[in-house]
Length: 281
Ligand code: AMP
Image 1 (tube, rainbow, N blue to C red):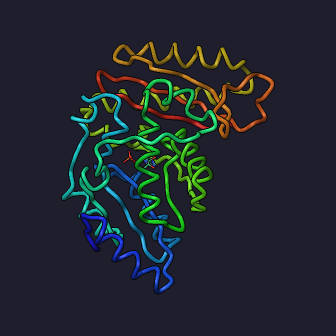
Image 2: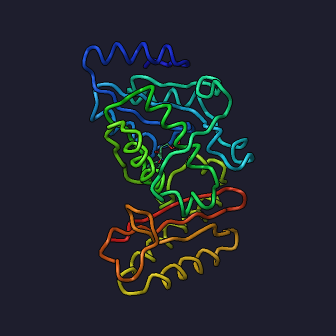
Image 3: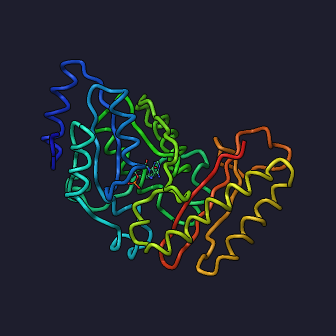
């Protein structure tokens, strides 16, 4: 596996591969890799001649400095995992490589996809995400790029960015990988102790109970049920609960239950913010 730390070396490897006609799959990450990330790498390996994984903790997408400072880092372990997976290249740029003029943030037309949920509760988050993904897509120009449905809104926004910027990359959405107890895997879970992880798994159980009543209850009641169940867990503090159209991400009403629907939540467990979602139909 090539470990490339700057843009010149990345471009050299990509030029060589593309001149031979190899297809390139790309998996962007912020490191502290877990099975969720590795499932994306595995899929990319099965569908491309060469796979590039980036590890970069993107400062411009953090609206909360404490979250940025405490974000887990385990680069040696990540490199070993990627090597074991037979990833072809890992790109670990420094901030100055990705933001040579300082932390400039670009704004993109996102068709209203960023109005609710993470967009509303983490101001500027998606501008930061799109800024870095736009830079990485421009550098790597992959055939396929892989994103997890764990970050459901992010995936929809990346699809939109791909259209707006006319990248013509095939954006592949991959299923959420969960711990055995249902907790959606996340790098931030590393900041939870064993007991907290057990409690955090309740989020998924509440989502599955909500899904079971989607067609027999009205949407406001389903949302109230989720809020009540989350509030019953004393260490949780609910950030949002939304039921939205899975493509437009606009709030769904009771007459639209045949449209693709997704229930999305964000919950604080102490200072750790967890997000999860479930498709409802
Ligand atoms: P991150 O390192 O958190 O920026 O995540 C990098 C990519 O991995 C994103 O596309 C995430 O949606 C995806 N990802 C993170 N956790 C999971 C998971 N539990 N299952 C599937 N994909 C995931």
